[in-house]
Length: 485
Image 1: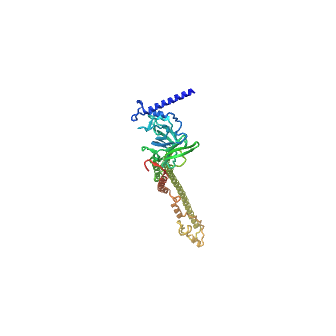
Image 2 (image 1 turned 135 degrees about the horizontal axis):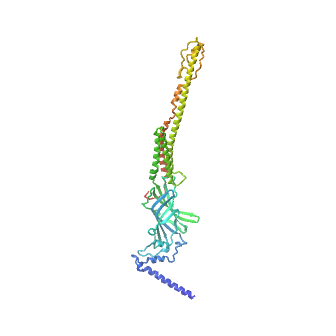
Image 3 (image 1 turned 90 degrees about the vertical axis):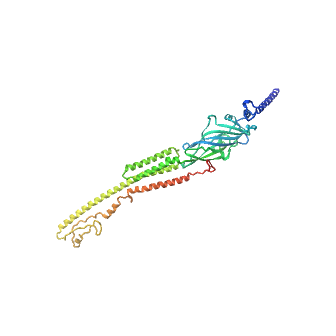
């Protein structure tokens, strides 16, 4: 009993001595710890006093109301937006604000807050904030750790840190390259539910700011918007903040590298319509070259994009250009095929006409021979002077002649009936259409193509740009524009 009493008295005396020492340290300072303009205040002693009974493993107000953590971001730069990797990379100042009553101190003249280095952050409780959609992130340590801590006399704490984050950004490339993408960063506590921590945007709509120097070669940063989300997971409900940044793609690169070259390739394929259809090497070579060039352009374009299953707007344009140059090659094939068929018909017609002439000559020769024999066999028969054939098919029938006079006089000479000669009118009429097939000559296809192909491509261009320019417009509500609305 006596020993316990002595121990208790010694403990009280030591406590009084320590309290006296801390009070004198706060009110008077040795020369090494003097801060100019602050009088006799020892900052080191204040910082050391915070650690008396402080447990950084326990959040402020443990068991009571949740800690309210305010967040602001200042985006310094956005280095890349990748369609292939579906992510974007940005460099920013990430700042968190919360209140820890255990870090309060007495307000004095010229001493309302303490600004300390990064080392002191490891001695106090900090929110376990993480980025939900982060792929990679790293702190900057040149020349020292790029972070600082400010402690106000009320216990309000500001922690600022510079981060570079690569975050995932699922993209819809249906209207590529006239698309706009909405990438986001999500902030959440890893272990504390809403009963312990609640996040909020500290400065309202001004909580996220983007530097005016932010620029990208293929995108323009249109603006951003902020959201507060309650994420429900299997381990509980978590407070989450989301910052969405809208990117609008610039068309300049794709116009110069894809749209204009593919259009010129289509125009070059039309040159074959003005070449002689007999110049087979020139027309075939031009058609094959344009088709292969379009194939190469399509392959190089898709190699720089992710392997997606749906059709992009640039695929529609390149497919139409490929169809036009391929149709130009098929057009010459149809011209050659029609010319070949017409020539075959012409050769067959000339062969038939030649055979008909031969048969007609044989029939005339045979008829004259028979008439000559009949006149020699019947000396008393009235003399037949001539036989007339109407070869043009006008007036009498082709076999009608003055032999009818013999029948009226009861003479029936043995005359062989001649076969009907070729209808000359029909032959002339058929000869006029022998150079056409389906009412069209081979050269007519080239004439029509000179008009149909340019008009079709112009109509396609007009519809393509009007339709996709309208469909690609995306309006985001509550968007804070970077350079004003």
